[in-house]
Length: 154
Image 1: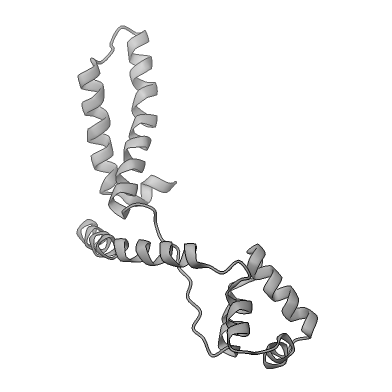
Image 2: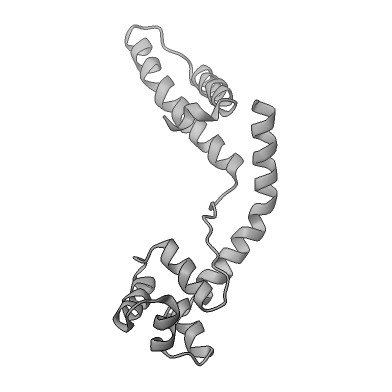
């Protein structure tokens, strides 16, 4: 099971640079008036015509376009609007760093959170660990946690 998870992480991470590049390009090229209004206008379609194609009132379309700019419109509504414009709706959540790096960082953070209080308590009882021993314990636990990713997010 751990190998399967690792394999899927590797496959995703291989695709990630292209996803990040595409997301970056779309992010910096997003029209200030929003995609729906921009596409509608370059098609030469009036707001009334698009409202009619969507089966909503003209004021509803204006609200939709405003909601897109504000980021408050639903994905389902954007999907319907894209369909009415004979366009594809694309949605993605693109990680900022590789899955492997995210898992590794979270495992290390969690390992520190678990080990440091115990080490501090042991030090108060004159049973403290050396800096090297402490570092090794944290790394061992982090490595173990990386193989059990579900435990990272509890």
